[in-house]
Length: 605
Image (cartoon, rainbow, N blue to C red; front, side, top):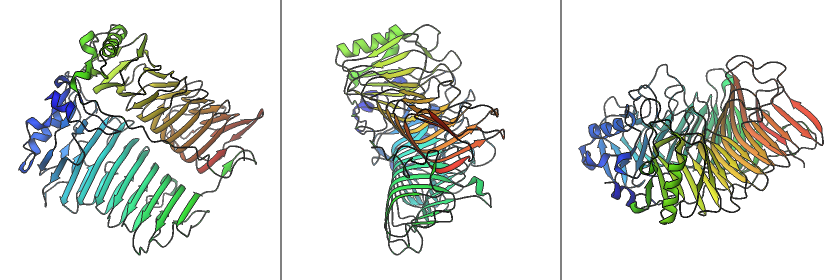
């Protein structure tokens, strides 16, 4: 099964499958997947085996191509030792794997739900919910959702198609506490609403296509959402940003760039806004107007919106620009999946052990050296195992070189400490599913002059000290980049307290779509003539901030920064006294007044 698993894995830019039967739970062995037999029980059992694995290491759940007919909601349950990790659920191909709900299903609120219950009190401890490379077919069930999605800090729905006559394609509002998470390369067709997003700690949408909804493409309430490359077709309203009840302070906060909306004779605006909105590069046809907004910036007629800020421009120096930085944007590079099982190497087979406390640096390096010597491309770590210790300990430096281009954990490799270095190796090197999960994070460093480093679903410190591009997707991490370095991040969750800032740009170029931060002190620093653009930020303090604490959330020192669609929430009632500090030509200015804004600029005209 493992050989077939690798050979048939899709050659796509995002997502991934697993290698080795020891790290793979294959649904194909228990499901008929013929579209006739009821596969509910077998598929639920496979899902449980992936997530509910006390003392048995996390695994990837692999679904071979076929039609899986189900009659009840598939539920991701909390595992037996109490943590909410997983699943890592991958289909062989997006269009080849179809999970289809029977028409007229009884007591079925969704096809998949990534939380044990549909409602009630919960916590924010539901991590690494991954659903990738498959199709969800709701069938004819008008009150049923495609996916009820609950994921916190890290988790993504990626390369998924959702179709049918249902209520919501993706319901991220059902449990009242979720996020931040990422929805990327997703197509939704049908439903009342494409994506419903409410009462969340941030959500990022990247490359989404929604069509034929009966009401609205996306609704955002009491959440901060960052959106890029959104297409909405044949839907009465593309985007609605609202607030609950009369609580305007809990309105949606949205940044959207590159939107294309087309319909026929709608009586609505393409975008209706009752919250905080930043929009750039929007095209619409068939709507009454581009934007209808109850804010000071008012409505926008016509078919094109170049740039719009619902609450004007906030800046500290009069000569700062009246628009966002509009930095160049790059998508994650195409990354060919390795389908030859002979090119997969397991670091555990070279002595790496995640159930003791010994240093695994030498063993992992041996695995990489062996793979490079034999022209193999993938080195993987088996998933974290049960009670502590359940991590790989790295105390030294690990060099990724030669033919090795993919380092992956199955389902996630828990790695504490150490440094992994990319330096003139493969043209693209990807790290995936490595996470310290509460321990000392590993450092992933790109020292290369030209190699690209891709980091996906990893909890780490990411460093750029060379010239090669860096891409960060779905990562709870810290970032450090220097001169000549460019970095693009989508769904960045930076947490903690750091004297020098959690995300630091010392002279490079940094573009971030969707960020959530928590803790104390400065979270984002740009200096040394660096340029940073942040699209969508949910920032909150879990600890009381002292009145004399001058560590601003954002600091720009002799550099340039634009920050769109931000909200700060303090659960203690004592937020950051300073939101932004800007230093220009030695003169220091402070922004203190507001906990939210649609656009802040710190850049010269």
